[in-house]
Length: 119
Image (cartoon, rainbow, N blue to C red):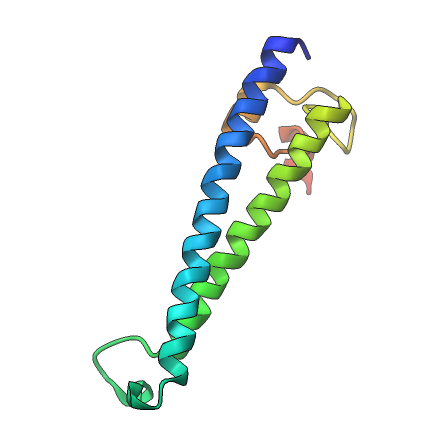
């Protein structure tokens, strides 16, 4: 991979990492609000409110979104590591180059399309 392409993917992954960090922080803050509301004795009994989601439902939803953002951060960090060590864009299964178009669409990809399709 040439220096210009490496710089392109470094910038792309760095921007996506900033977005994922922001998303994880937003989810964590929202989750903190749900936990505080749940622990508030004056918060009321939302489990019997027919009009909306319960705090438990909201907690579960936000936790899933937070875990997804953290997983994305981990995948981005791994891709940045592959960029540093020179293995970015190489399929981990067959060793073939992963097309740049695929990497632009999914820069955390570790497999070429044929190998990912067989998985």
